[in-house]
Image (cartoon, rainbow, N blue to C red; front, side, top):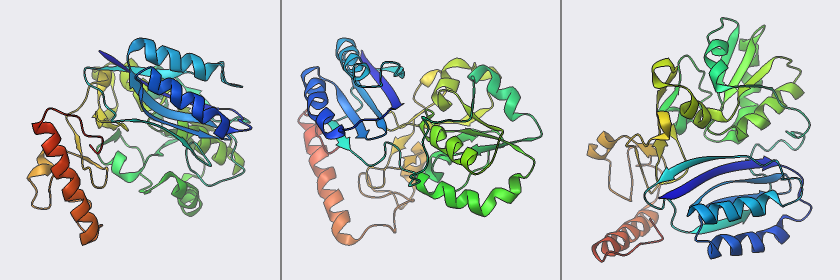
Length: 300
């Protein structure tokens, strides 16, 4: 059994590049795979590996400057959900493109999963899903507003165009694990709003803590690994991923005429040129050959 750990932490790293090498080496030595992003504003990512390896990496992260109180969420998996280990340097650990946003200064009011249903059921509360449209498409909370953004960086423009809709409303926002709401609530506070709330621990914590029979969540929650989407108890929902565009698919979507495994789906059938599709087909051919030989393929 492998442990999956999802984490983020806002702090100030004076030299993220100096952190990268030792962190990557430790992950590789411990058999840990996944993806971690480092930036001047902190660290974000999801990793998987044996219990001892995950513990070693988490201890290393918590020993970094300002990271002693770093928290994480865990799930279990019978199979490794990642093909390799990547530690990348970025300008932001979650890209919003707003240089004045600083979650370390202040954020909205945290709402525990057990109190979330009561808050979002109030008539003076507008509930906003801060995730991308393809994530919202497979699951969200009852009555939540979908900004229809293709990336988190589009959220400020969406707010500017729609803020009048929320006059005299309290704002409650949520995302997968909480990191996008750290920035979006700070942004709205900077826009002059006072009553801004967000789901503590994100959807994943809600699905872990709130029983299904009491839930206001509908559908699956997209996650950034080979589980694709999870439901209550963080159990996989059976969604699969298009390995061309990385969007989640219902199993029935593989029966659409546009679907070609590893090459395209109905979402991206018009998004890639012929040359890229041929590269996708070759990658899929190599994956199939590796499967037939009982070998792992890093391009999966």
